Image (cartoon, rainbow, N blue to C red; front, side):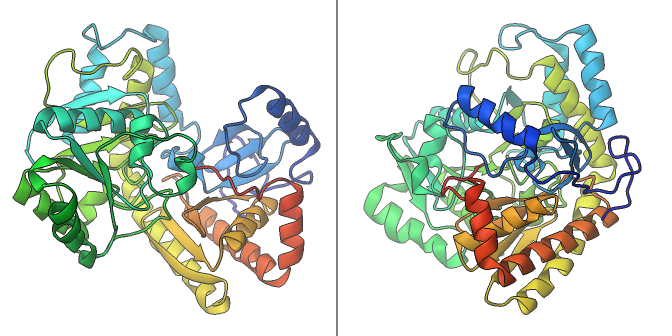
Length: 450
């Protein structure tokens, strides 16, 4: 157990489970939630958080958990980082809302500048548009690409996750269930194979030859490392090849860095790992720590073409500015170091449980552990939860580790030990873990996404 202390844990170790999990208050809350909350929301397992600090989360029963899910890779600076909280409080005391779509909001422009300055864009100087979420800026990028190029078609990738709104879910192809019952979806979208240099032949041999001429393709949108689709890292040369295809045919390359960006891979952006500059870059999730903010960098359209009532609200902008300071002040470097520590600690599981653990992959603190089956991945997620470690599935049969970039060496050691114990539980007591998880409705076939 971690010996790193914080104000929330005090002298208690983390994790520290003082009731069964879920505890009695958590079970009561789940019943209350299911009475009033939309059933459309998937839940991975029944944790009911009430407080958090860095990678420590306290639930409604007073149990302390080690959080390596980070709200689906959102809490980049940890839960309630003092600098982010101070920035939010100060801004809220001055001005909470004034729509930047209609008026000149000073902190909006400052945030656009800071984000644009740290973003590699193919055309050089960039400008930014701020929205409320990742899905919002994905939608904006579809509009922008078609507007700027006057072309109708957009290419996304098999395994991609870009959001749940209509345009974004039309691009999403990580699981068929996200499309089920909602067709017809946005027209003019094609899906390419992802990740291998050899896959790039699909563009000439299939898309441009048989489906759509290259001069009618507006954009290719790609997650530099796929997120919900399984934390899939492409081969070296794949992103460079996409850049070359776009350059040859006048197609815009859109990098969806909503999950992979904001320092998570040990670089500010995952595209930096391969030296690729997109035409448009999208960010959200961790760019403003725990506040709702999305950004689309490199804007080229006229007044009134797009807007948002709440996008880039002053409080979220203040959080983003504080977040960028923290990322540049050492958290990106920590992500790279702790990521290397994690991979070194996880790799032995492949030798220890070769029939269960089939791959360990990722960059920085974007780490995927592949299992031999989806059922085993769900069981490991549940067994980790039972030990006080929060992780989250992704892809068909993987579990992701995506803790805050504030995670310490000691906290990483603790998480690795707990995860190894969870894997051992599943390897040795498969039936018992499965039965417990099903009884708690943690294995439903519908998991959280993003």
